[in-house]
Image (tube, rainbow, N blue to C red; front, side, top):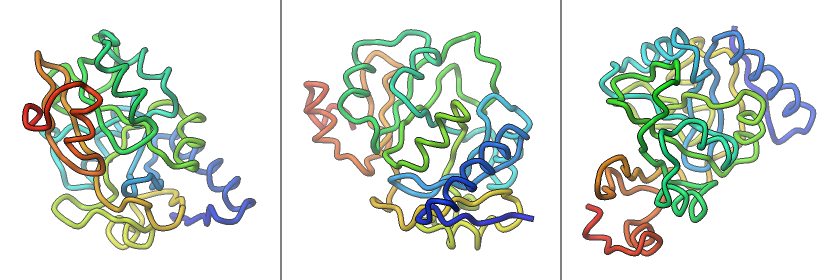
Length: 216
């Protein structure tokens, strides 16, 4: 039986975050608010939980699950090399609406899908998400919708799609941005913007010292 916790109420928020932490540690799925959209998440290192997440979304491993982190420091243990380019993007846009694809540390025992040796990382700008992530560690998080359906900006929309497949729903109100993060791939020789979402190509190019056109 899933439960919704209203994080606008202090007592409910404390209880909800604790319930979500317990659920994640037990290999279950939770729905959490972020600055962009609501996310469906689990322990990034629990391969069965990640497989359940993909199955719940009706999605295959050809679309790997991104990973959310609760601090700048966490990225350093997840990447093969913390490049100056990655550092520049993290310092400019985290927490916030930029997802960064980088070569992952080869020793990590996770299975996020067909990542081809990379991982997509983001630190969301939402206090409830940050609180949860600092308790659980890195979480595999995808938008809280059935694949092909509209990604939700409220917990009600998420619950309508996912229902009892999720143990805990954290209601953090309507998402401030309401559209997906931008995705930049810096795993190759040149940065490439795969999706322009919450942050514009122009702003990303400005930080990297390149033109927006060169990123597309």
